[in-house]
Image 1: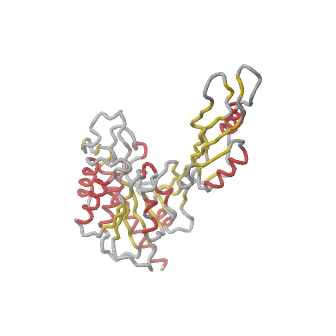
Image 2: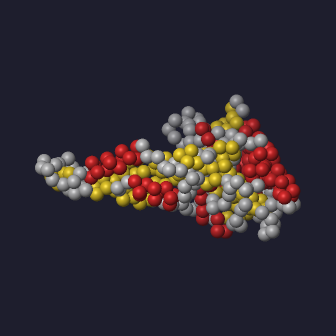
Image 3: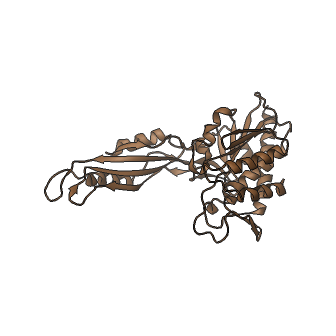
Amino acid sequence: MYRDAIELLSQLIQTPSFSKEERASSELIEDFLIARGVEVHRSGNNIWAFASPFDRNKPTIWLNSHHDTVKPNSGYSIDPFFPLVQDGKLFGLGSNDAGGCLVSLIGAFVQFLEIDLPVNLILIASAEEEISGKNGISSVISQLPPCDLAIVGEPTLMDVAVAEKGLMVIDAKVTGKAGHAAREEGINAIYLALEDLGKIKSFKFKRKSEFLGETKVSATVIHAGQQHNVVPDLCEFVLDVRVTDAYALEEALAELKENLNATLEPRSMRLQSSNLPSENLAWQVIAKLGLKTYGSPTLSDQALIPFPSIKMGPGDSARSHTADEYIYLNEIQEGIAGYIRFIETYSELLKKTN
């Protein structure tokens, strides 16, 4: 499966699959699975398959990663769509984020086809992850059986992210009163906004997370005024809020509203923070395999999965979205083996508990 995984990843690199434009890459994945006797389900550019007939009496594990990519940046010195192998590395757009994870999950999934496991195993290759799109994994969750654990394939050096920050983008508005700048008229909305911006600069949320530390809010965009001689009656700014698992998005929003004068309107409440519940069997697997755990500041499809999840995969997040992106070939081999060990250990522990 290692050789097949490398070949599939090479084909994916050659196939542009920007978010919302993943049709060709979804067909590649579909054809790969069908060639191995797998019955494939599809919705839009999302692909999923069952390793064995579904048994409602068994717990369920999702194996999820995405096949969309960002667009290549201007720093590339090589063709981003040519799978170049050099010095033990496979170069190409999406090789690290998250092609290596996806083909490693597929490699592990194929090893368990028609094997009598004590769990249902479902592979999900999702679209639009890079933009948290509504036609990505969130569009197919209602068509899938709920899971007891989702393993989300993202480059983590095969460490386990047991918590992940959510994201809330807020449009803030402060209203003053227009007037002529040459006279003592009006109420300057910029000066009113400065009061809030000063608070935001040093704002501390009340609760902290064990794995993710503090929830953080940053002002990232500001706009006010139309011409130099008019006192502005409106100042608008944008807040980027990275929310830990200590808060639901609604709770973080309420705390900000208590402390700021601006009118706050979140653009979305979809991208919730996540953590792995302490009673989940995955914790025992992590302990038995001696895996390193951490809290992740970066978003993934975890934010859209309403079930217990972890994030784990070959490659390094530091290489994601960089010029001349690459993954080490041995990382893919280790990724396949690591996923297999995790599933086998989960199954062994499940049998003991039953």
